[in-house]
Image (cartoon, rainbow, N blue to C red; front, side, top):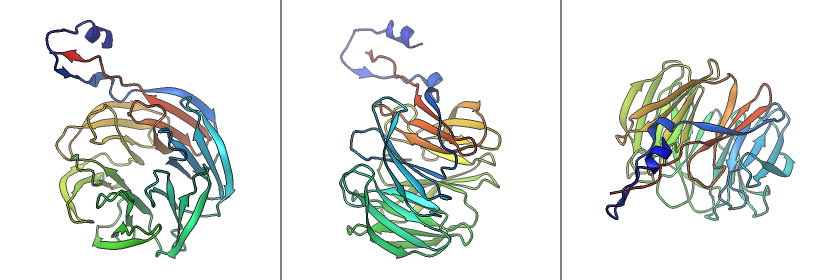
Length: 332
């Protein structure tokens, strides 16, 4: 189809428009399929060296081993730069920007003890310096990095599915300090909360999803930090175990989605329509089961979202690049 469009270019004016190839949206091409170690409970996309490609932190909560690796420039190749014993039992590791340097800082949290440790990147790939330790309360099972006020630092949404409490906090400017700006009773049982861009304003919007009922609620950020306005509620399929925010087709900043069930292997790609909360399914496929986690990555410089799919039971890691290509410009 791309060749057909290329042959149809008309040189009749100087205004350039691009027509996306919807038939190809959602295609991924495997570039590397490797047998990694079993048991990585968290795989965190990181920026360790400011080269624009996604580096990784892989962590095993059972052994405490943490491995930092940098992208080599060959899609799917990662080079280990540091291995550390990070301690057992971290249930959430959240990538953050605590100091405006562009490198990935971290919040590491244990839901059983409430310990929260903030650390900043030193500039040496894989080195993190602890700047703050706090007791943050028990049971925060979902912690979402957010932009609540456009200051360039990472704010947070912390949610406890057992109590329904959701706490929004903003970075104060002191690395590791967060100031609570809003607490709300958000309801019990949300299993996935996805940061999104639903309306081009750079503040973080949200998709909240319950796997047991299929209820999905889309909400947009208001100008008041921590306030979200519901724009759409839908009954989605039950049983999604991962919902991954993606840029699937270069449609200027709005968030597409990959929804996946590790139990059935069903994978569904959808793109935003432009109406906040509306998504159009562009591809459904049956993948294999037990992929967890699924990590959005940049494996090349095309701006589209690539993926790392990891099978925690087998240790298989599959890197794939977004296969969608914009056709040549049609000049009108």
